[in-house]
Amino acid sequence: MHLLSWLYAATLISLAFFGWNMLLMLALAVWHHRPRREAPSPTAWPSVLVQLPIFNEQHVVESLIDAAAALDYPSELLTIQVLDDSTDDTTSIAKARIAYYRARGRRIAYRCRADRNGFKAGALAAGLRDTSVSGEFVAIFDADFVPPSDFLRRTIPPFRADPRLGAVQARWDHLNSSQSALTGAQALALDSYFMVDQITCSRAGWLFTFNGSAGVWRRACIADAGDWQSDTLSEDLDLSYRAQFKGWRLDYLPAVAVPAELPASLTALKRQQFRWILGSFQVLSKLGPQLLLARMSLLRKAEGFLQLARCIVQPLVLIALLLSLPVVLRHGQLPVNLSWLNWAWFGPVLVGLWGQIRLRRDWPRRLLYYPALVLIGVGLSLNGTVALWEALFGRQHAFARTPKFSSANQRESAYALPLDWTTWGELGLALYALATGLLAVELAPGLALFIFLYALSFGYTAALGFWQSGGVRATEHVGKKAQGPIN
Image (tube, rainbow, N blue to C red; front, side, top):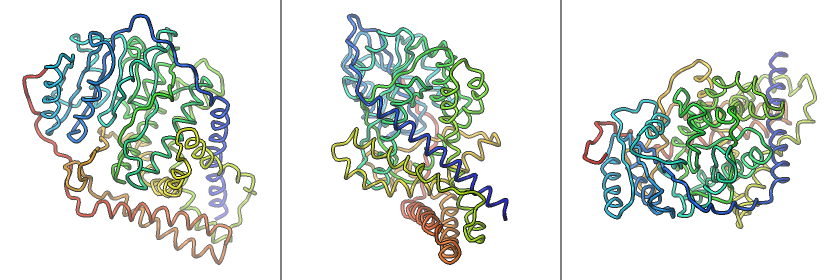
C-alpha cells in the first residue's frame, strides 16, 4: 500500500510538470504576443499546387472544392488537385463539381487511386509524383476546411523573404463552435493551442508542428526531408520534425484563420483523439533517437520531446484515479508534501483564458464552455490510454477518418458512428470514482472533491456517448470505387 502511495504521488508530480510547462509556454506567448508585420507581396508570384485529400466526404466535399476554386491567385499559376480515395458517393459529387469549374477555366486535376495505401500520406505523396501537375509551393486542406479567398496571397509572401522557410501554418478557426457544449469545448482547447503552443514554438525557435491542414509547404522542403511517409498516423508531425532536422524553418501565421468543422459527436472526437495520440507516440518512437542526437540546444530538445510525449498525460490522469482508492484507505496520507504543486493546476486555466482574450471579443461567454472542456478532457483519458497502450505494443491501425457532417443529420448519415466499448468503460470508471469519493468523505475529505470531479467527468462522457449513439446502427459505406472519365 505504501508503494501505491508513492506511485500516486509520482503521478501527480508528473501531471504537475506538464502544468508548469504550460505556464512557461504561456509566459513566452505573452512575451511574443505582438503581431508581426505581414511580408510584402512579391513582384512575381510563384506557382502553387493546392492538394485536397478526401476520403468519403460527401457532406463537405462541395464546399471544399468551391473554396479552393475561389482562391484569389493568378489562375495560370494555380493548380488544384483533388486526391480522392473515396468508396462512396463522394466521388460522383466531386467529379460533378470539378467538371463545373473546368468548364469555367479552372485548372483542377483529379486522381482516384485503386487502393488506400499509405492513407493520407500516400495520397499526398502520389499527388506530388504526378508529372502532369506542378507547383513550387503546395497548399493542403482537409475536406472540412473552408480557406478564405486571400489565403495564398497572405501565406506565400513569407517564403520569398527566407529561402530556408519550409512551411507556414495558418490558424484553425471553427465553423460550428456554437453548435453544442462539445464543440464549444473543443474550440476553446484549439484556440489555446494555436495562441499559446504554436505562438511560443514559432517565436521562441522551438520545434514547430505543421497541423496537417491549412498550411503551405515549399515543395523542395518536402523532397529534402524525405517526402510524405506513411509509417505513422501523424504524417504531418513526422514531416515537420524531419524537415527541421534538415535545417528548414517552419513558421506560423496566427492572423490567417481558416475555419473548419469540429467533430460534433463524442464518438467522432474519440476517433480523432485516438489517431492523434497513437500517431504522436509513433513519431516519438521513430524520431526520438534523432531528436536526442540532434545538434540543437538542450531546451529545444526537451520541448521537442514534451510535444511528442504530451499524450502521456491521459494515462497519467487515469492512473491517478485508479490509485486514489488505496490512498483514501490510507486516509489520504502521502509520503511527500505535494502542496507546492498547487500552482501547476492554474496552467490549463490561464492558457484557456489567454487564448480567448486574444481571439474573441465575446471571450467571457466562450469561457462558459470551460467546465465542459475539463469534463471531456478527463473523461476521454480512457480512450487516450487505450491509444497509447496499443502504440506501445506496436499494434497497426488503419487511418480512421473523423466523419464530417456539415448540416446533415448525423443519425441518418452513413458516416454515423455506433457506440464503442470505451463508453461502457467510462461508465464503470464513473461508478468507481463515485464509490471512492463517498469513501473519501469519511476517510480523506481533502481528496473527495478531486475524486468527485472524476466521477462527474466519466459520467458526463458516458452519458453523452450513450445519448448521441442512441439508435445509430450505420457504419461507413465501403464499396467499389466509382470509375469515370475524369483524370
